[in-house]
Image (tube, rainbow, N blue to C red; front, side, top):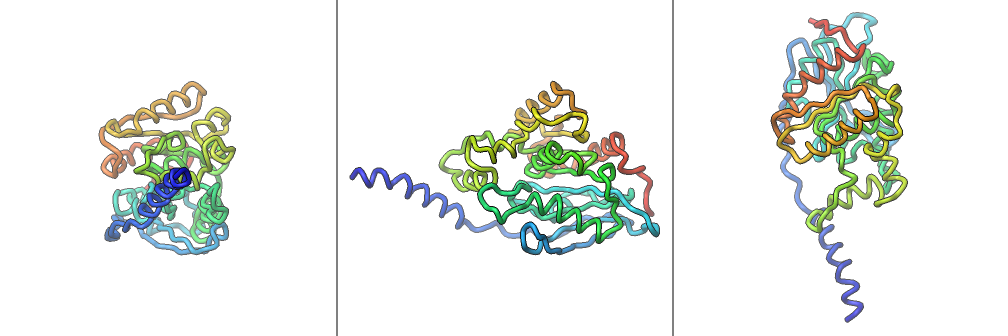
Length: 298
């Protein structure tokens, strides 16, 4: 009987993980991208050495590009359980490509764009911030300097954008995060969310581990140098659970004298709110970086 009491919790946990992993994925939504006038769209598949497999990404760029011209690049990271088509299907972001920008939307799966602590083959950070950038800059007329690169992420992608701003500040001159899951490493999960808990543990490592600490923006902000960190545009919806964690994070940035701005806007954790934040982010991008002169390419 004592052995049964010992084994039962483990069996329950295994059952919960199995049930979670066996749930059917929701049906794929139709791919209906919004492509603005004077903008072309391309879907690219390339081989990522870091992941040792082919990965897709979507690109918007101006139809008319002058010979020898090198265009600034903005990388757009999707959220958890999303995909590389999300930005194009749920927003009108393509219109900014007509301003002389290359917009790159990579596939990130549910990875937080991190090198997974528990799966050495899942090196998503190396894929996204080494392999992908290299492929974009060799395939397209893309500028290859920090001041001509920017990154914008939503939710999971916003977390990654903030984290990379602290750990690899030499890559991007501007960072924007919409509703970033900034507190993901500090959440407690109940038994109904065992599957999500296990995925987070695989990516970031167990509680208290060095791997987890090295991936936590709330800790990294205390070590980062404000003078070397790119300008940060941070926004969150007033009706979403992430409002309070992001308010506290903004206060950390303020106390440490980072260059940033923080906005609480109407809306929740959804594309209605995020699409409405795109104009403000690009206005800030133009104001606080040398990435573009906002001259239309028509």
